[in-house]
Length: 98
Image (cartoon, rainbow, N blue to C red; front, side):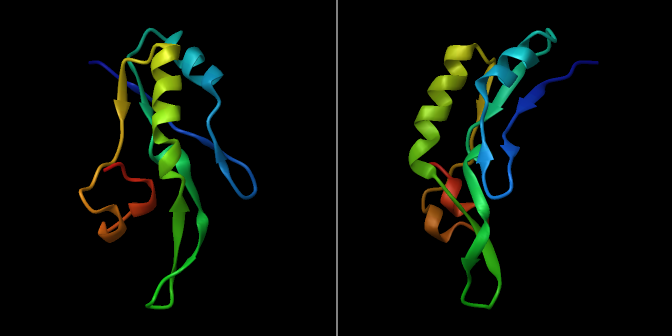
């Protein structure tokens, strides 16, 4: 049996943040570590939808920064959501890479 550890983000009252130290600490487990560089950049729900609901936003422009930071730490893989038309993606559009 094998396992992989996934590094995402931590939440504060109104934001998510990535602490690269956690990726390093996960690497000390000797398990493969994968960094989730898109979910880590979601913003709290608050964007109003036409149907009356709300959705989370995101900081897509920071995906390359978080990915490079993760690679510099030495992760074994990068996870990211991608879509050819993120604004029309069924979910997580604001944090999908094109």
